[in-house]
Image (tube, rainbow, N blue to C red; front, top):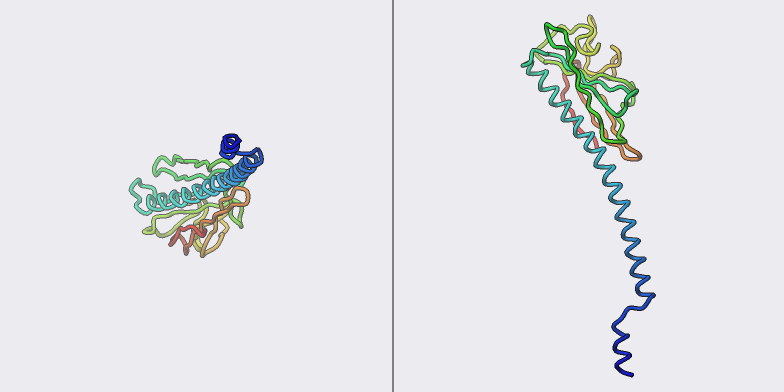
Length: 188
């Protein structure tokens, strides 16, 4: 009889197995939703950081004017909220060169006002901007500004651009005065 009890005391009962399976299921569900939240947050962060990187690279290219281009634009259209476009006109030939950047799946870009906007990145050594040189941001005979919507000034101090997916959102702030962009950084 003692041999029988010692053998069964080393085995697990059905209740112990069910409790263990329930604990493992709870841990699995928590891990699944944690990974989903991480993936959404990472996609929005990637879009935010790529936008900042693209703006800074475009700003540097315009500031150097090495390719003969003194104005470059970054354009966002809410008709296509999953992308933004970097463009410039090649001197002499007047050919428009555009590169469209597609955001990660489900991520959208927006600004509070206006919905469609252009950020103008100009060579700071230039003066005398005219209409059409930078996506209609530089208006002849009036103040030049770095962000606009069809020639209408967005804000003379900053523009917030928001990337979002579901409940996760991250913001990029572009600060400047006139045609000079002083800072491009993430708020979140």
